[in-house]
Length: 180
Image 1 (cartoon, helix red, strand yellow):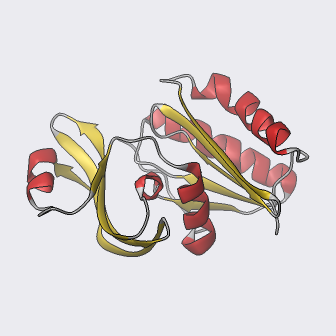
Image 2 (cartoon, helix red, strand yellow):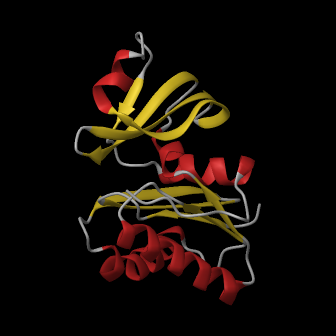
Image 3 (cartoon, one colour):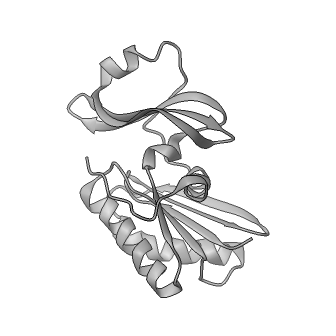
């Protein structure tokens, strides 16, 4: 199995994951706005902890929605590594990192001023299989009122392994960043 690195800097959390033939490893640390200061060292530490050389065959980036600077820090770093390593950089929505387990579920992140960025997905094993409601900015109380008992993962740290699996399953090479 080739080595895959996933990263997300769209939220207050620095989220990283690695997958390789020998296993998987992920971290999610609250860093506030210090992504630029912590991303490179945390990535090298992750490879070191896995006992792997600092090189991946594929990268997956969480494309937001998120803070303007945070999203751009992660995307720039991933694109730089992708170029140096001659590896593709696949993009998926950061909201896919909030998906847990299997079944239909709602996910959302605070978009300020009473709004959320939200989506509803059908998932299997923590990977989105179908988008029921696409990512959109919605009024928070209006969105939660429509859930009718659906599991709702709100403002949780993204899972690096969920992003990684989503990227490998359906990540796109022509992605765009989404800002708050």
